[in-house]
Image (tube, rainbow, N blue to C red; front, side):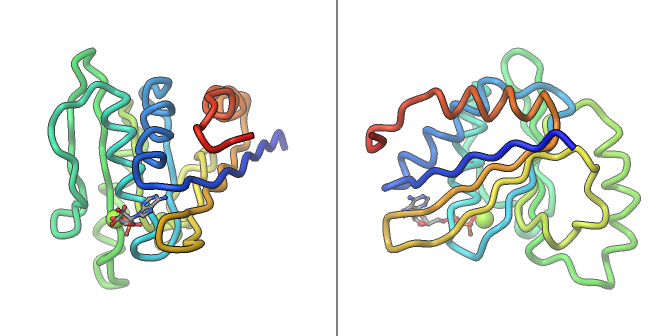
Length: 165
Ligand code: ADP
Ligand code: MG
């Protein structure tokens, strides 16, 4: 399989948001981002950046109680922000149907705690792992398995972060 990988460290929440925005500018309907990492690792901050990069003005907050928030970009792209943090096993079957519809659609999908629905994810998804290094630094690991993902990873990797050498 055609796999690609890129690892970077952000030194502030602003850097994580900027990275998300760079990616967001390149996303198209049908792209699925699977974000994994502990509480406070930066998944929502990254999502806020993705929304910003898509031109979405509305404030993006974690859809912890609604499970899914939907935003429309000025150019018509739709961002579906899913948060599986509170998804229990009991509700998983119910959500299976909703998620299948979601993945069959043509929206940009970003999923926090994607490891909780790993069996339901479409095979082609761009994985982003977040590791807490210290108060201000997070390690982000991007992993993809298609030409499309290689293109997206290339686009963000080319964007120099202020702290990169
Ligand atoms: P999650 O959605 O993974 O639970 P959040 O994005 O909600 O995490 O929270 C991340 C927290 O960590 C925020 O309070 C943010 O200000 C802080 N933070 C500090 N450094 C970073 C960084 N480099 N990247 C992202 N968030 C950071
Ligand atoms: Mg979150």
